[in-house]
Length: 88
View (tube, rainbow, N blue to C red):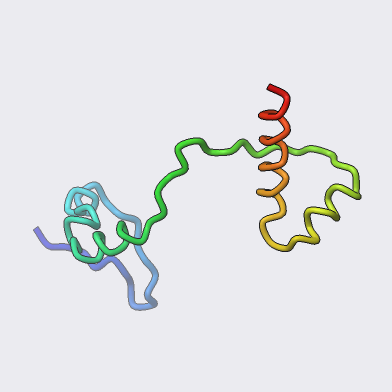
């Protein structure tokens, strides 16, 4: 059983066959050291991810938080959490 090259003379990749797919192996199996290095650098998933929403805020509020630099959206989130905590 001969294997056809994956690319033609122009470097174009041909469509993969079922046979090609059957020969494929997981990246971590083929390159375990590299996969481990990538995993070590991966940021753990947030246990309580935030929902992306659209909300209209007064300009003065947005300008106030943006004046503090990067992370202004996280600061708005923190201020809202504090407001909830203070009400309870």
